[in-house]
Length: 250
Image 1 (cartoon, rainbow, N blue to C red):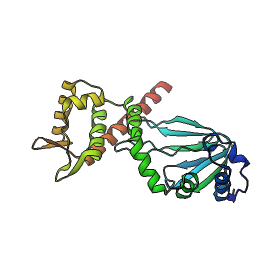
Image 2: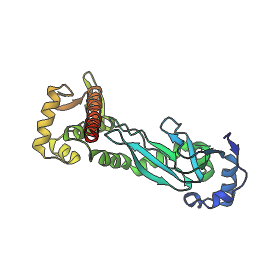
Image 3: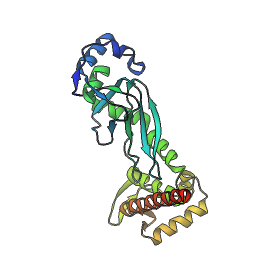
Image 4: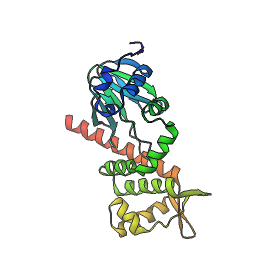
């Protein structure tokens, strides 16, 4: 259905997670929305959509799904009318392929994030993003890591932690990314939920596979090799699951 402009605010007043806006703000938001209809089972948004657009579910029921480590699409959140949650930023080594899907016929309003933040808060969206990131301290990474870790092997968990540390505490090195903080085996063990001897054993294995190396006493992470390693283990897990499914049907 072609996108149309909505002129009323009555529908917006009943949406719980934006009900705190004033009548004037709701009027401005209503006039700025571009509304479209998404049929049942249709995709409302996915990771290909711009992160600079905010989406509001005006009517209907939606759900957010992602792919688990075995490649199956899993329900994450049921979405009621209101602002649709934005997808979390990508995490190195993890591909979730988030998607918001229509469970029923849905009416969806879209607005540039910059305009939505200015109407709601009266500030620039870039300022809002910086403040939100500083205040939340990237707890989203912790939640995503914990959810993903439940289905990962120890070597996969260690690889993911090393990639995360490289992103946050790494500087370029001829052999990859050098960590600027001490990568103590005890700390790594606590982060991945394993014993210190097991971490030492796996770090030695990673060195033999040239996934990591040492520069003096600092750890150097070969991110490309680690990401390739994770991709290969993901493919192996999916193939193994498919094989078990075929055997159960035979």
